[in-house]
Length: 345
Image (cartoon, rainbow, N blue to C red; front, side, top):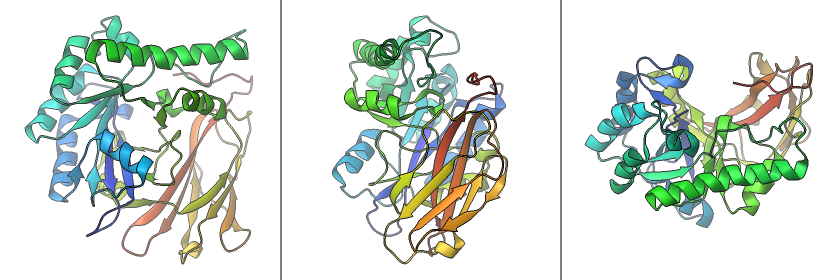
């Protein structure tokens, strides 16, 4: 999978402290529709960014600003891709190069090592690197990181995940001399144990749950907005550019994976402030709006009405910001099948 990441800053007319991350996969006409935008649609997105006055910055600039809490430029944008699919080299890069736009590729190194025709070669990645493109880590084999193999011990699983991450970083550094220790989780899947490994290795990481990034975002679970398929229309694209991080002080949720038939509870505590809490709404994948109960002035609880399906799903919560934009927060869930198995891809 090859995904584009775009980050757009929140505030108008002044330095900003938040960003919106947009996730793409393929840019092609004949690739899987659910993970693709056509070249024409991608060009439309770039036109929207350019005409809207967004400032494209590098991933390194974004990560430095988040770590040091330094101001980001108003309406800043960072573009990245996951997986190093060849169609990004053939279709997306010429458009980005023509506009002198920096971007990042999150590389899973095994397909490149094996010379898969669907992916770029190391020679092509070196060409991007020499042109100033950032290359970052998407693991070696694109594995479901929280998922243990049959009969695998906890210690063996931890060692395998460390090797997945470190081998990809090593191969990228060997071939391109780049090493940024920024990871994109394959499939956006992670849990607390995976985050502990990533933290101990000294990485920061992106998931695939929707939402903008801010100073208080979890550096081990940074959100991104998917913008493929139906999420890639011009209207949907513009909507995501108008979001701000939910002003959260605390989040309580069960860890992944969830047992079959789960309706996981989620508790969100907002920072003190004059928020439009009466207009805060939460939604579950495939269920629409779900009940929100306020436990006090700043803390809410929400839970799906029906069990979540096996596989990946989300709770999304939104609230108007009062300036034509809205706050957004997403929690990703991974639910096991009735037999206690994971849903694969």
